[in-house]
Length: 399
Image (cartoon, rainbow, N blue to C red; front, side, top):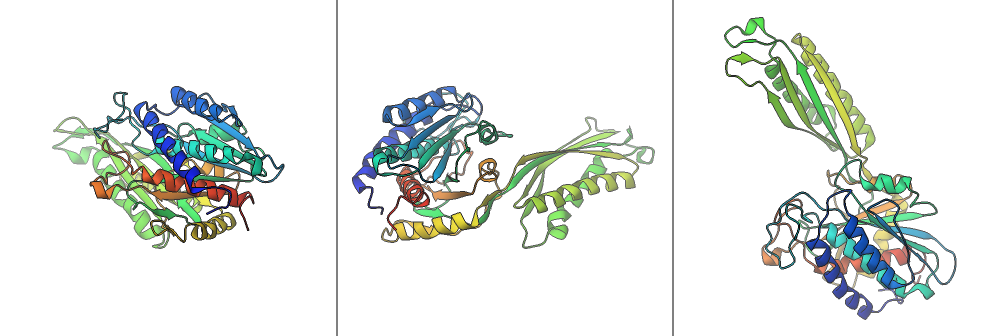
């Protein structure tokens, strides 16, 4: 543990973090509507007294702490703060008071962790060099995402590197997952419109059956990940929507498909897009129909910087080596989307996972579930990780 910080400082901050998390949990706000959440976070930062607070966008917050020992490296640390359109079913004493809106992904915890990080570092201001930028980001859940807007607003100007994390209710408490390279996937969506020729169900030879053509397209799309993308490359094509026809005795002239594409690299992403387009066009043409593809790019994959991540991994292993409750490990990437990529595409970044499973209480519901919850003990682990890593990256920790 860093010589700059006492265990007592972490423990006292942890108590406040629980209060912050529970307050934010009770008053969730949807993406691009986080006005009260941003106001609450601003108030907490202003109470610290030595952090410059601003609003890069209408519902985001940026805090800037300048070390008292002069210039040095500048690090940004990010937390997302938006909630989801889900009716909460946890029966927690601090459950959502907003009907149909819930913090079902742990962003309330992320906000509390970053507030705690700002508090601990602000108390060390006179001993620090460089600058620490705290980014409370809006709208992670809805593309094009809030990170892109914040970057365009200049929040990374002068920043050398950026840290991010996610609490995982499906990962054992005590695990810190730090992985070099791709850590989350590109997350795109597509829609396909098939135009055939309507006809009576008793005379299929006189029609061009858009529904059966759509079925063939779906079957062929599955070959992309099994026969076009290599077995060591990660990619997913999931058709999640299929609508066609509204009568029992009419062969439909139109069919509509839609779904999701996930890839860990932009190269695989582009190959998958090209193959989707080829399959749609060729299958439809073979049956005298027309298929039109609409493809919408989502978030880019998050790629953890090699040098930065290796250094952070080694430091974390050293810092937590004497704590048997904490394991610093490497993990496989996830195929979920994350707009942290908008930051890490600009400056070197490291995005990690923090285990927050509540298995001892039988609470292991996944993210975006109405009974989702996290172990609040994970807040303390994440606080220590953020603070100790920020000190290490900025050269403020003991060599």
